[in-house]
Length: 190
Image 1 (cartoon, rainbow, N blue to C red):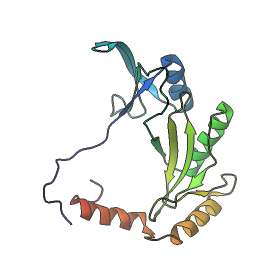
Image 2 (cartoon, rainbow, N blue to C red):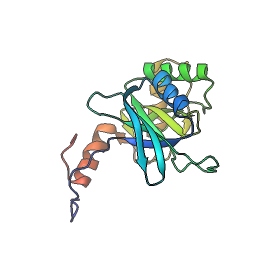
Image 3 (cartoon, one colour):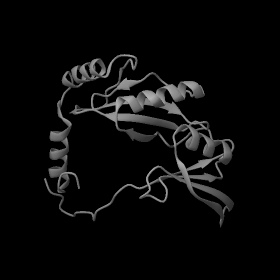
Image 4 (cartoon, one colour):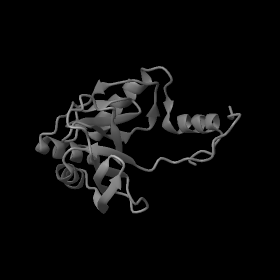
């Protein structure tokens, strides 16, 4: 179904997070998640002077993440539900799982959503992050089932496929993307 009033093309690029401790947060995102600092500086704003650190893992993006001072000290609720990072395979997911265990990061056990296998954890200031691997399947969400990353890739993928097939709307990821592209009125992959 084509939209009646199409919106011009829009692509997500980056997110900014207000932080308490810029040095601590920069260290975490650089050392643990492999980001590179692309720029840094200070800026005078109506609310006062702020410091910014821009980070990226993609040379096509000046920054994918901006860390900005000025987070209120007594903020009781983080309005960011999560920031998610895609990885290419289960080996990379296992790498981050081991690194995060070494960091003693506050994390939940790995899970499958049928369409992805994910690790959720908190950065040093409590923002929930997700590192995930896309599977070849799609099923309606939400789904969250535990996954044992010590098992073989074949075992994990077989169990994830079983979970996905047991849910409504099961199909291949490729078919789901084609259907969604038609719904959005865009060519597949673009």
